[in-house]
Image (cartoon, rainbow, N blue to C red; front, side, top):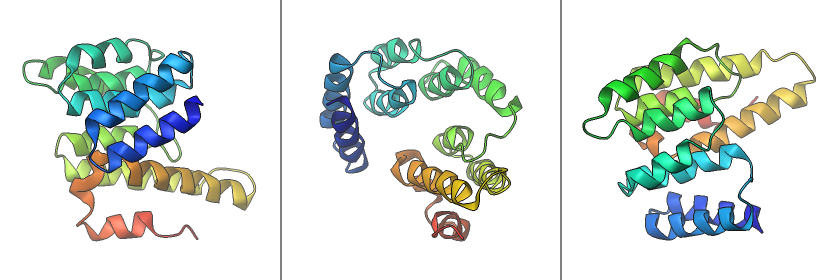
Length: 173
């Protein structure tokens, strides 16, 4: 199933098996070309890691306009020679309201080595998730999804030695 393939691809990426991860993402998209758009973001990250920029661009252009596509463009265009495009996509992302539990802005900052901005964006997203109106279990679910995204992203490895990382990835209260 596409879901199983995407999950396997994510686990392979986390394990550092980038070629195998890209192959599984590709198989998942063959099975279901219109699978959830947010499943393409880790595929784009794998392709950028492998420096397969043409493929990453093709996948990025399939994302909906706005934050999803800007996230992909900010990753993709950070490659040498495309800083202006990456900066523009990052600037657009940075002007959007903080989405509860969203890690996309923080991920771009971390990818660029901007640790303090990445950590500030994660803390803002966590705080926004904690302030979501609704039943307490909904807040916990939102925080759990955020933590899952944080732990799966290879770009956040640069933050793992920061004491705030442990706080952000601890069991939600």
